Image (tube, rainbow, N blue to C red; front, side, top):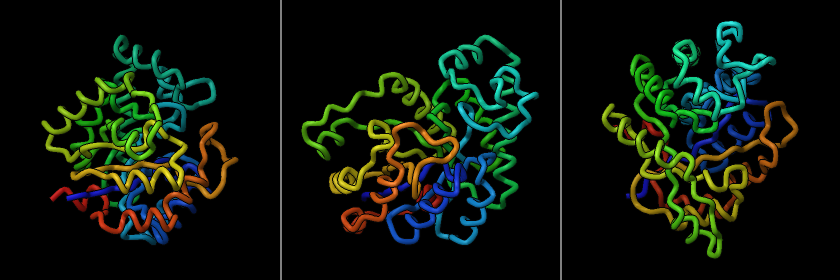
Length: 278
């Protein structure tokens, strides 16, 4: 059976993102969204989600490059001079390995974000992290440990089969995700041991910010059996605080409501992770 979760990341980042999530769910193939609980438009995202009970919502943990939930003063090892989570992921990952204070701050911030999500009253469909930082073994351990206290039942494992991308777009030479592949494999093992649902594959890594209507329709046309997560970054327009340079936000929104995408998804069982956990 072909099962599909179509996710929008960065829910709550801006009104433009939130508007696109609502449109793509009402009029397109979007089934889930990942909420940044402390982003500028988080309250608006929660309100929209409550008006859309069929939209499955999960937690998009922010551990890099955006707004923490705890005060920055409580996270001196994790934040920068602007009060945001640090951008230097490689150095931050090393600091987590070397500094007990950094690990304690990390655990406190992860718990605070789970707690903030819990306070929304929304069911927790899934968990993932901004920039896939949850594949870091120390971060993964904290997420798996703390998430258990909040009923976490599914987690993203960012593993993308390159042969599927080549079938969808012949002639393409997608760059292998060698930097996170070993950690993603380890996360898959640990998540299964914890009894969590994980996707068999996750689409959206190589073409992050460039999931055009043509690409999405082609990927869906070549979808294998099993559980696939296809994640996107839709928005009605760019120009908002926190946007990623070069991302084609509106094109990704268009990909989720395009007739070709809707037609290609018609023969696939779609839902959120919670619809498949049984």
